[in-house]
Image (cartoon, rainbow, N blue to C red; front, top):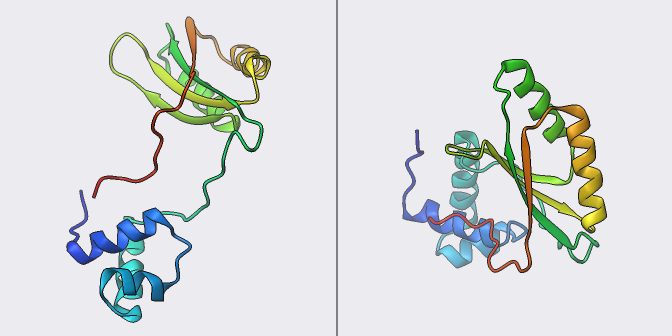
Length: 153
């Protein structure tokens, strides 16, 4: 169930999404409020689960992780034990930035960040040694056109 947010909550969230490192004073000034009400609203939204953990965004390429692959996985296995092993394997691999179970012909899509194609192959070999996979298609992203963590408010 979606939390009920007013316009001020949305303004505060927009500021936090843009830069969570801002001081409460900065956020309050930008949203036209004072520090204490902004702090109370942020605390309330944390309690409601609207705001999760706070982190920093790193530049993958600056860290040498220049290859982004989208991996399409089809499986002929749908048992609970297979799925448990598969999900554990994905969660244990830091290269996996995102994993989604899909409706349609493809069962899963993964977003992987690695140094290069050789590093992707090492990931692939490790994954198929842990779980049986029917078909894997890896798509190399040639250019990142848009990537954001900002949700539309």
